[in-house]
Structures are given as structure tokens and as C-alpha cells.
Length: 176
Ligand code: ATP
Ligand code: MG
Image (cartoon, rainbow, N blue to C red; front, side):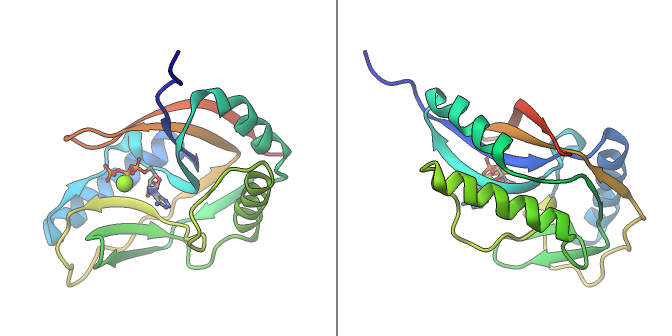
């Protein structure tokens, strides 16, 4: 019998619907300036660790890792909107990464590596992608003040298609 086809997995924090809708509305305003494709409200997230292709049989071990990673709930303020020229993406992020967010990303990374999972070697860069395939904006509108309460980590499966990725939350892990 052949092994099951791998799943494309990542760990993320997901905003409450009202935060996602406000970010999506902001992205539509920014789109007037720089074009591009707006991230659907339901797809807005911040990736903590990207795992890539993982055999579904390893998901229970992966979930154990996430449960072992210490982390506490906190507020994430998205204060800055930026453009990445290399990926043509407009994103929002905190002015400074909240220590609790950096700590949870670090704890996840440690537990994942200890359990033999390979994660992206790049340094954690807290960002929320709001527009793709955008032109360089002259000026981005200012972001509304959004109190994003981070109280859980989600394990997500991404399925790529020609119309963009679709995400399915496989499991939720509350933060203390
Ligand atoms: P699309 O690829 O359709 O633009 P996407 O990038 O959101 O959408 P995925 O490529 O499945 O979809 O990525 C899921 C999440 O993991 C995204 O937040 C993405 O930024 C992040 N990600 C993808 N590849 C990597 C990588 N090599 N290193 C770190 N993070 C990654
Ligand atoms: Mg991608």
C-alpha cells in the first residue's frame, strides 16, 4: 500500500471575523492605490510556522508538539502597512512584535525541531498578507485600530489551486 499523499500544513493565528472584515475592507481601499488581489476575509491569518508537505499520519505528533509549546494569550496590534517588492505583497504587521507572540513562535519552533519536523529557516516575520500581485503603492491608507486578541493557535491545511489557496483548520490549541 502506498503512503498517503502529503498535506501542506502551517501553524497560524487567525483573527476574529470582525477584525478580518475590517482588514479586508482596508485592503479594498488600498487596492484603489496599488491594484492586486485582496485576501478574502476568511483567509486572513498570521503564520507562526510553515511546515510544508507532511504526511497526514504525522499530524497527531505534530499536534502533540503544539500542545507542548508554552504560550500565553495577548493582544496583537497591527499598526503598520507595508509593501514587499520581491513578492508584490501588501501586508500589515505590528510595529514591534509582541513578546508573547515571539515567545510562542519560538516555543513552537523548538518543539517542532525537537520532534524532527523541518520548518522554514527564515527568521519569524510577523505579517498578515492583505493584497497579492500589487503595484508599488505611493501611499497606503492608515490602518484602523484593531484589537486582535490572540488566544489560540490553529493548525491549518492549505490546498493550492489556480484561483488561490484555500485553508482548512484541522485543530485549535488554546493559549493559556
Ligand atoms: P498563495 O500561495 O496562493 O499566495 P499562501 O501563500 O497564503 O497563498 P501557502 O503557500 O499554502 O498559501 O502558505 C500558507 C501560509 O504559509 C502563508 O501564510 C504563507 O505566507 C506561509 N508560507 C508559505 N510558504 C512558506 C515558506 N516557505 N516559509 C514560510 N512561510 C511560508
Ligand atoms: Mg504561498
